[in-house]
Structures are given as C-alpha cells and as structure tokens.
Image (cartoon, rainbow, N blue to C red; front, top):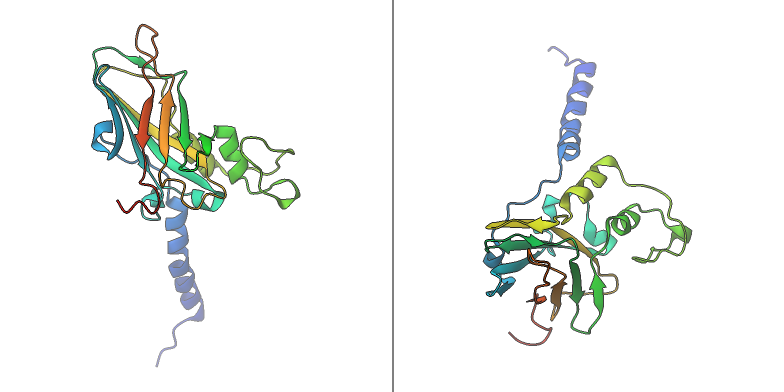
Length: 215
C-alpha cells in the first residue's frame, strides 16, 4: 500500500485552515441598501416642508453582521439615519444636531469620529474605559486601516439633501451603563434648514415603547 506523503498532508491541512482566515480577512464593511425615510417604522414626517427623518437602530447581532467592528463590545450603538427631501428645494444639514434622549431623560449626543476612534483603539489610560467625549488622559494605540475605513465610510456626513432624494449614514451613541437605551427613547434632530436659511421645526422620532408598557 502506497504511503501518503507527510509533506502533502501538512500542506493540505494548512490550506484547509487558511480558508476561513482568508474569508475573515476579506470581509469589508459595505453600506446597507436604504429606503426612503418614511419606509422605516421609526420616522417623523414634516408635511409642510415635505421632509422626513427615518431611523433604523442596529441593535441586534443579525443586523450588525454588516460591520467588521463589534460596536456593542465598545458600548457604542449604531443607528442608521435617513433623511428624505421630497420638496423642490435643497435642505442644508451642516448645522444639524442629533440627540438621543432615553426614558429616564439621559441625553446622548452622537459621537464624533475622534470619540469613536478613541473608544475603538482599545488602549486606554490606566486600563480604564475612556469616557466620551471627555478623555482625562491622552489615549494611546490606534485602529487598523480596515477599522478606520469602516468608521469613516459608515458615518452620516451629508451636508445637504438635494430635492427628491435621500441621504443616509450611521450615528454612533455611547450607551455605557444603559442596558436598554432604546426603550421609551426619543431621537431629536435640530438645525435642519431650508434653501432660504430658515430652520425647520425639530424632528422627534420615537424609537421604542417604554419597558413594562405592554404595548
């Protein structure tokens, strides 16, 4: 009986083990396909200006598979923001402000890119988690290029929405010590302006029923 060469066996085993690693390394973030803002259950439509703000929280393991970073491990909650402008004039977003207010009135501002990078970079002063957005000491360490590309590609960065179109992207909120931040929460968006520079009425999107409401 012919003996199977040992070198060929180890080469085959190495190949089998390498396949999952190659697949993992090849995974890259890609923005999910979005719908008009009014298509999302959580939305607020302003009939006068014909502008709609829609939200899609990525708060479960199935939806977060689109990311290469496990934001939950870093106490960051990604929420997809979609703004649809069905009017005949552009709207300006450069001065917009997003705020998540929990059921107990805790106010959370969307994290800036530097805040997200500090949180993801892992290495914190004295081994303690660095609070967002006020680190007490200089944070060392860095994210890798794939993580940086994802963070920069995922964030909502639009400065305007042209007529009959939508803009979308993710906002990230620091939900440290908040076990159920969406229950009874409201999302407020201010600073959206029309083509004449007039600020639109604020948008108020309810994200979840309060815990124990039975609804």
